[in-house]
Length: 445
Ligand code: MV4
Image (tube, rainbow, N blue to C red; front, side):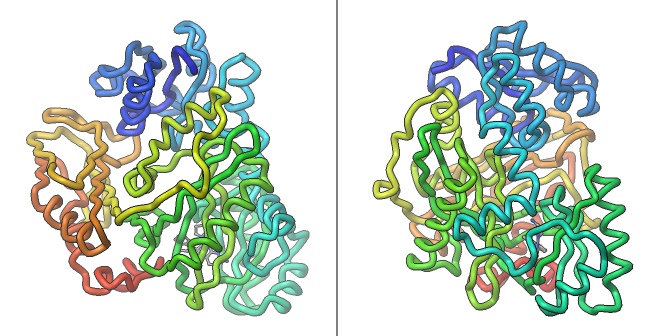
């Protein structure tokens, strides 16, 4: 196992990784920006290196500075967390060429899965259901028109370098294709430096279901069930739960097996997530592979008892997977509410500032992953996530009632947060019945 690793991140995920390191007897090195000097990840790590100014380009995204911090502290590996450099294939490559282990999949796997049309083609070869379409880069708008006629409207144009909702155009009628093709192409070029587009059938009101996978460097792959992530706003997830209220044990096995085929077909290793869309007839289709640990990983941890960060560290250190699919048991139900420093009354406008008063809830079946403390100042430069509130219960009804109780106990003074918004969703009758899809927030709120 590693003796010392560097964590190239901040906030709650940096703390989460430091905690796993402590339990495994691994020394941790934090990196931080000038504005993060008073952050908990700096205080809790064994060592900390300031790598630059507040702007992410100057610090958390600055590859030479992150690598230098690892070199001067003799860190053997880098955990990137999520966001920042987590899915940057170039960064993973540089780590390896500097003799630093990147805690994640190999650089070429990150690169291949980052090319969405290539990823889709890989899934076709692995017998994973994909959304009907061409899975190739479109040459011009006439090719798009021809394919759209075959697929049938509505269709969607997606940037092959996009993902997570960026660079998509829905097309409901032939007359729109030429214009939208040209716009999508230039937007993709501007945003990703890659104008490549592909086309597929547009699925109305899908549910977003993702499967957690773990693969070691010896080709062993398992899945640890699904997470339902359909409660989202502008592609930002707000609430996740596991198991999904729509998935029964038969569908769980099918989608889990498909995720394992996907991972094997991509030569995947380390922790990853295979995202699927589920249509209104409960057909599932591959969407993307996320080659990182995700924000919502704790709900899988609490129903499976598996510490996913420790698994990432062990896999990266070359250990064989100590879990087998037949021994994975998922028990009870877990929900996560993402608490953001945003004003839900005001279009979810960011609300950074000083925490003047804080009471974090507790009790049976509660986990809170947060880096905030009383008098901490939330800087305006980074993601607005301030806490992940996770409740678990014997069944869905109990974890929902527990979440309601926990949100009522929570006090965060001095800034606006999304707590009041979560209370409303948790009490919504369709949410309680599990009747929702990715259009839920738009329609009900
Ligand atoms: C789609 C789709 C419908 N049909 N693709 C959005 C995020 C990105 N990963 C892909 N997304 C979608 N792709 C087809 N062919 C609907 C979405 C989508 C969505 C997906 C997951 C979670 C929330 C979403 C909200 C709106 C649209």
